[in-house]
Length: 101
Image 1 (cartoon, helix red, strand yellow):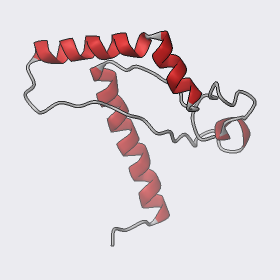
Image 2 (tube, rainbow, N blue to C red; image 1 turned 180 degrees about the vertical axis):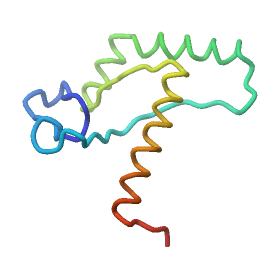
Image 3 (cartoon, helix red, strand yellow; image 1 turned 120 degrees about the vertical axis):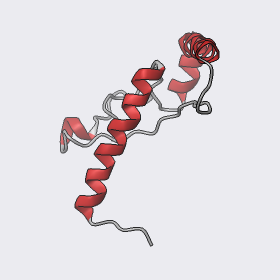
Image 4 (cartoon, rainbow, N blue to C red; image 1 turned 30 degrees about the vertical axis):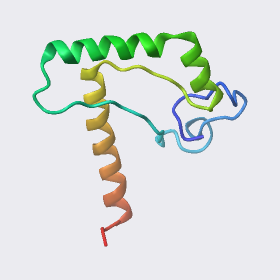
């Protein structure tokens, strides 16, 4: 698995980081974004609702049953994650010499 942590569905399957490539971490993620200029109070309400849903045991179980890890990130941490992924993947793409067609 290329996720940084093992998934509950397959607890005995090691990650790539545990076996051959500690620096390799690639996982799918899902985020929710709003339009530029979204009022702060609206963003805060959405953030609170998403946090509450993500904490629900039935939601946690449903996600775990698909082989995924559910991790809620507040909006500032999510923005940081986007920046980090963009930088890390950009380095890999340039190192591989990948060019758009």
